[in-house]
Length: 402
Ligand SMILES: *Cc1c(COP(=O)(O)O)cnc(C)c1O
Image 1 (tube, rainbow, N blue to C red):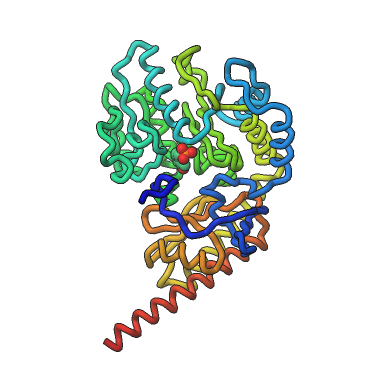
Image 2: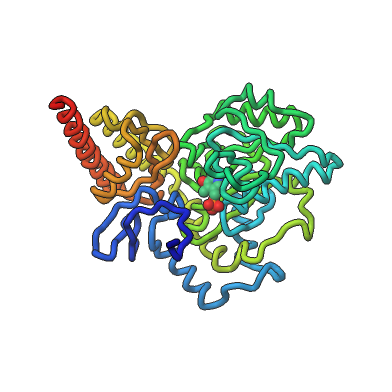
């Protein structure tokens, strides 16, 4: 019999009743160290006092009015995002994939408003993840995501990961945009690197294309800059964000330059909930925290510490771990054993990590952990690796006896 919840998820048999910073507590009072932070969502950890305060205050005053009326804290959050980014304008959504949906619509509308309605194609990269909406799965292209869902939204062309040559070759007179995650998340924490971002920007400039960056996972301070593309010194025309911006409250956004957004006039897009007062109250508080003096410097410092710890794990456990990659607090441990075994061994040692493609485990911890908590996480992962080594030894011994 089907479960009351549609069985589309493979869930761990774990459930938590309470969180505090990077810690999660089960019903039995067991404490888990959360190095996944709800897939990079809880950027400020669990139960951050400032987020609780603004949410409670807003909850007592006003939950929802719709976008028929002015929403002052939506305006305030848009102003903050505009102030701190390349963007001139922002549309708020409830999720990442809705932000991607708008990015696709915006890019197409841009050309159609300029009298080039045939320019609808968007080039994406193998391993991409842009969410689960119709445009999101068409853009992502992964077999599991698209099979059986009928004709995909046309207009997406996929090229090998990080291949500038293939991107160049894929550009036609119908190309509207190139879309990428500066660091692929679900794809296995794979950074494009600064040179590629610069090359892609240059390609877009040469061919009059829009550059769309999906910073839903790598943005909001995760790499030690507010947005990952800042390291490369180039900017997109359109950018999608979500995950960290709400700190756990559902919130996403599509940011754009005035030029890229020029087709999106009144009536061309909308959302009932997008940018609602509760979400934007929290979003403003998250932005204030992440853009506060020294916050991102601390992220980089902590990231260096975590990376060093993970490099140590690779050196200590060469049969379990192969490499560390990623940027800032968006790191992956390449695994030599099945990644699910590593995640499960982590559960055994009460440390949560998240699997990703390419047989890596992801670490996307809260940005404001202490170095002691990072040390504790590395120590727990070390014990998990020891357990896995014992299992390997057992298997090998059996092999020898046989
Ligand atoms: C999570 C994610 C999405 C989808 O966001 P949802 O909120 O799940 O719709 C899209 N792009 C990237 C890069 C993501 O990490």
